[in-house]
Structures are given as C-alpha cells and as structure tokens.
Image (cartoon, rainbow, N blue to C red; front, side, top):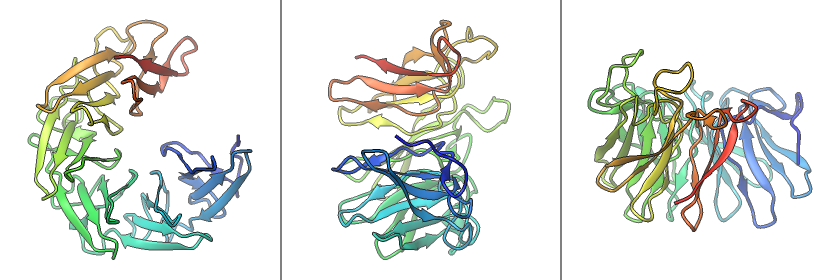
Length: 319
C-alpha cells in the first residue's frame, strides 16, 4: 500500500500498530522521518495514497512518537512521544487540519510524574487517558498514569522494582476492564532477580480504579518465559494472553533460556505456557510483539526471527 522512503517521508514504523477508520484509511506514527527527522503522524488511504498529517520538530511539540494512536469521536488523534517537551516526553493531541497541541509534558511536576512514555494510550468513556512510562515515578522504575481531559495528570502507581514489583512499564498498551481496572506487563522487575542484569524477568500487574497495584505473575526467566515486551490480549473470559521475548526451552539453539513463550494467565494468577518457540527448525523465535484474539479464541502474532528463512513468522494458535 505504501513504501516509506527518505525524508521528508515518514521512516521506520518499528513499534506502533495502525488504526483504521470506517472508510479503510490507516493511521499511524513513525519515530523518525517527517519534515524535520523527528517522527511523524501519517495517513494511508485505502488506495495507497500517503499523507503526512504532522511532522514533529523534536522540541516542545515532542520527539520520537514510538507508540500508536487513539482517536476520539471528533476525529482528533492522541498519542505519546518518547522524548521532547521538557525532555522526557509528551502526550499530544492532533486535531483535524493537522494542528498539534501538547496535552501534557512529563517532568512538569518533577520526576514523580513519570518519564519516557512509549506505549499507546487507553481512553475511557469520559475522556480520561491511561498509560505507562518507562522511567520516573517515586522510585525511578516507571509509572501507570491517568490524564484527565483538562490535562491534569495523576500517577496511579509508581513501580518499585525487584524483588516485590515490576520495573520499566513503558512499552505495553494497557487493558482496561468495565470496572476500571488496568492490566499490563513490565519488561523487568519481579521476584526472580537472578538474571544477567540483576533486574528481574518482568511481571504482569493489575492496577485497580483506586490505584492499588497487585503483581499477578512474576516471570521466572526460564520455563515460564521472561521479558514480556508487549501488552496483553483477552480478559473477557477471565484469561489473559501474551508473549515473552525469551525463556521457555533450553533447546532453543544458542539461547540457553529459550526463544520465548506464548502464555495464558487466569484470574487467580496461574500461568500456563501454551507454546515454547524455537523448538523446531521451522518455528518462529522471539515473539517480541503481543497477540490478538478473534471471536473463536484463536490467537495471532509474529516472531522476530525463525521460520524456514530465519526472517520471522506470522503464527496462529488455536484453542
């Protein structure tokens, strides 16, 4: 539909998922490219015509929009940038016509409000946004935050790091249930602290509507997987699904702890490893992205490596 080229086109759409409207137009972000080289918001029509809706300058308006977009009923877009603003990222609004407004500048309340947001936002029915940051907060390990429509930011939880809490929650997009509880994962932290960085293998967490956090799962870095880089899917039936970038099997080539797992997690915090990647030569390895689920319960995802040509796979996992 569109092949990205050099400046001033958008470049390197490496993280964010696309969103689509009723006419089949696609919208997304790239952390590089655009008129100034600091990232862009783009639109691709159903017949493949691309338009740059906004180019970031890398200054007060934000820099490196790594996360995806959310859209309201008035066709305004909202997202985050990893840097820019005061230096540690912003939440921005892009109105129809390409007018960008910084809704919140991280660091404006000091380091306790979080820093470096790289995941997409979640929006509730009253216009509040929810997201995560990879750094900052009370302990420097990242935050879960709420942003009201008037731009008031509240830190719902500051990650405490190992051994009792997760750390670096900046990547995953949160899930929000009908009761206002938020669910996500952290790349580091948790009870298992024996890895090479000494920072834990990651967690799955829940933050209640009142801001009380619970660690639902501590990844062990081996058979149960480790380092979940993306968020969760599911939740409607009480089970969550996700992937980890390592762990699972000692038979995965030169990687002694394994090449990642596909897992489910029930409401009681019990993990089931559904698949260990890389145990056959044709299988994928390193499922860095999460999964999506269809109405029949099938899960779909991608792997960074592996497959018959060792360049990654698209996989389906049936119930």
